[in-house]
Amino acid sequence: MESLFKRHDAYLSTVPMEYIRDFMQRVNWQSRLIVIRGPKGVGKSTLMQQYIKQNFSAGDRHVLYCSADTNYFVAHSLLDLAENFVKMGGKWLFIDEVHKYPDWSREIKEIYDLYRELHIVLSGSSLIQINDGQADLSRRIIVYDMPGLSLREFLHLDVGLDIQPVSLQQLLENPAKFCMEIISLCHPLEHFSRYLQFGYYPFYFEQKQEYYDKLENTINYIIDVELTKFRGLDVGYTRQVKSLLHVISQMTPYEIDIAKLSKASGISRLSTLKYLAHLEEASLIRRLFTDLKTVTDLQKPDKIYLDNSNLLYLLSLERPEIGTVRETFFANQLASAGHTLEYAGYKKGDFRIDDNIVVEVGGPDKEFSQIADQENAYVAADDIESAYMRKIPLWAFGFLY
Image 1 (tube, rainbow, N blue to C red):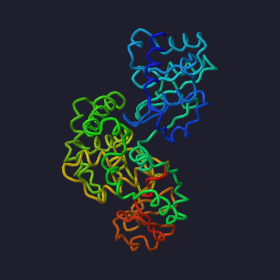
Image 2: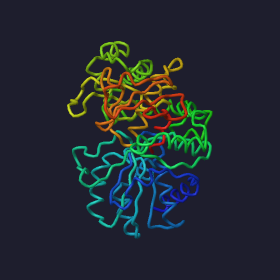
Image 3: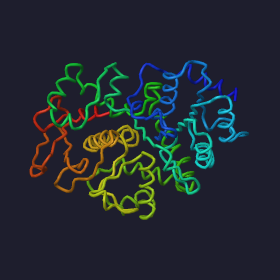
Image 4: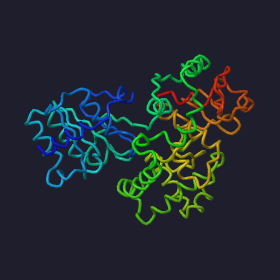
């Protein structure tokens, strides 16, 4: 145990506290069992360490942060850890990278049932299963999915702007007022292109020159390690799945032809649909359907995007098509803010949000002709600074979280 506490102290001594993401406030930390899921690199470990540093004194042994991939767990189980920790008066146990511990859910369930005064906070891959068939944690655990940085958060870290998030309803009700408030503080278009290329993953601010190398390593880790372990992807097919991602990066999202996608990536049609579902679970792509209520397993999506625009710039062999960049950004920011997205339908708009809002995304000259007969419809236009009636700058949707 002492070795774990030494590492705990070392982690907390170096965790940055200059900026704490608002995601911290989304989490009900008083719940007895929490898991924070998300793709590698979005800041789950930092968030857990920051919470401890905020709420516990240095040297407090009632709290312990450790990682499930440490050598301690070669000779000890999670149950051993919890038992010894509780005997020493432990109250809060933070376990990072829990998905790297075999059969973690069964032991966590047992710990939860045995030690009723212990708070357990876990972090793990986007792909971890809460109910793995052996230990049903779904009735006990609260799951939070952590996204990467919004444009608003990127501006705080990049240029020091402290701006509060705006709800979608507030933005749509008075977009001109909101845009004027932001423009009084900065010119968003000056920074928007940089965010689209580099701003989603927080590790940009650690090693800016090596950002795309680290992002590529993250993609390789997700496919080579996580998809093979958690979704049974045959190691021999990892190359084809990476090829599938590259093909998607070259596509315009307007027409999805699974047969062509399958042929270009060298994967059968059925396997292509299955891998698309897994890639979405891993937060590498986003599938859109016209009606989520009727979606079936392995149904062909109506649109496919990469999860965020940074992936698009990395994977595209040439500079990505600007229309795809715009729609990728919009879909990512709305979904990350907790909104439900569907494809609005041919000639009816790009997106239907929360089943009642239609948004068409385009350039500065985008008009309302495509959505003229739609109620509660808006245009999200790139390369404009101010809003006019229902035409809202695209960048403004980057302030929702």
